[in-house]
Image 1 (tube, rainbow over the protein chains, first blue to last red):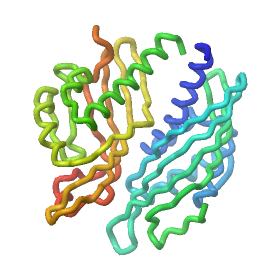
Image 2: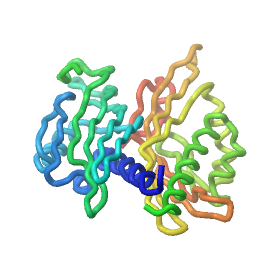
Image 3: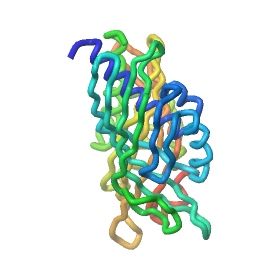
Image 4: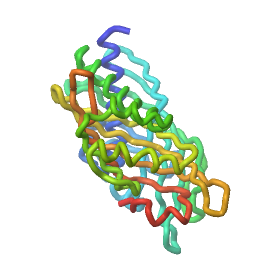
Length: 149
Length: 152
């Protein structure tokens, strides 16, 4: 592996982490430096929407406001480089603190993969596509309607 | 990314992992190679103390010995380099086995972030500050819920 390839891999890993940190800190503008303006995003496997980045960005704040605490731990990052393009697969373990209708909250655990496409731009690597693939759902409160993976 | 920057990033990642391994293996003396002598450490978000390293160093062993098994899985390490200094944010998934007052044990799962400041020293990168930020508390035994920090 030469220095350029090592650098590309670390930059793409940092991009994937920057996505998780922007979402977890609810810094939606931070996602402008993760996705290309016309990126395609598909959250349907976990009950979300699909569409282009501007539409997704507007939707995210409202959709996640329901959850007081959550995090997206990413790992198992597999990257395939192809010049100025790349594809990746990432596992995410996602605990979500979910308010209960009768008061209190319950932590549910979701497991999912992200299937990504990346592009090298003058500003650095960006995601052009992110598609969720469902894995497990544990301890989901009865009132939550998440389609089964 | 230049070769020195790649080297710095990998060294800082290794430091963050060394912290987790030292704590999980209860090799507290190894933490002296993780923190600077006067580092500021703040564990208050999960019910611990804050203070400078010598004080936290003597608080840790009895605090951690209460738990027979635990691990700190770190990930999502985001690093911003600025010459001989750096900042990092790390997510930690932390299952802790807790003895129950009536006998038996219960595993609680905590999730938190570490917000770190790092400095390059003659001996390599070291943490000069580590502040916990709370996220998730799951399956915390009732007798511990008073002391566990409140997630924001």
